[in-house]
Length: 147
Length: 147
DNA sequence: CTCAACCTTGTAGTCACTACAGGGTCAAGG
DNA sequence: CCTTGACCCTGTAGTGACTACAAGGTTGAG
Image (tube, rainbow over all chains, first blue to last red; front, top):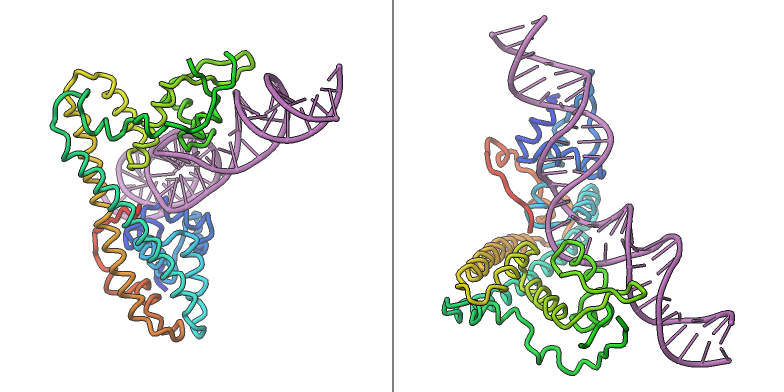
């Protein structure tokens, strides 16, 4: 059986050595055997598992999602509804992030387009960030502390 | 002059009390006066400053960006090119994130659509995540996952 | 034997908060 | 006067997913 050092596994999976140790520490990646010199010695299943983790991370799944996915993936005869549910949930989250970022992009773009590039006193960007009195008007909060 | 407690400032600016103290600790928000009982006592300039910070955070600017923006905003007669540059840089970053997320969305959507919902052994989602031997040969590609 | 490249553990830093613990202050009600 | 409860104080530690050392041990080539 082929055996791999942590550095080799990192190179093959494009993962930093520290990250691999981190995944082991949090119990995401199984502990490998050790050599006589106390080096980690990985089998190809470890490499496969790490590749799975990295691929899922690339797709934006959280560590906890991946923990669940790995657990479910082990039961090859079970229905894959659980897997699909996690993926669908993640898809919804991604869509929410896209929507939020698009709103930000539009707002920032419009603000920048309006700025003529004069002095800061007239800068539209600053104005867009500064509190207009309207925004704070009529809050009903009264000062009641003494100095 | 009206004076405000930290709780009032938090209510007006929709900011948690802990967050206001955090901004003060990192030097983003000026230190307010204190009352006899050692309570923070804020003037309206503080409220304006905090509102600026919160608005900028809503638009996704980093704390360091905001530090710079606040510094620049103080010089009302200087040209606003520096401000615009920060905003433009941020706009580019947002566009990059949108592009990344759109790629993820497509990939996840296609994968989910292909899954017939049978057993995990045939699950397309798992297959999309599992390492194909060929995909792992000699790719020097590094991905910064942060999404 | 030396040297560099690799490996080990452990700790602390990142970002922008958030959540306590363990106490102090203050105004209102009894 | 005393109590109650809302508010405030400081300080520390936790979040997610790593990343970056420090200080030392192992290995293989020359």
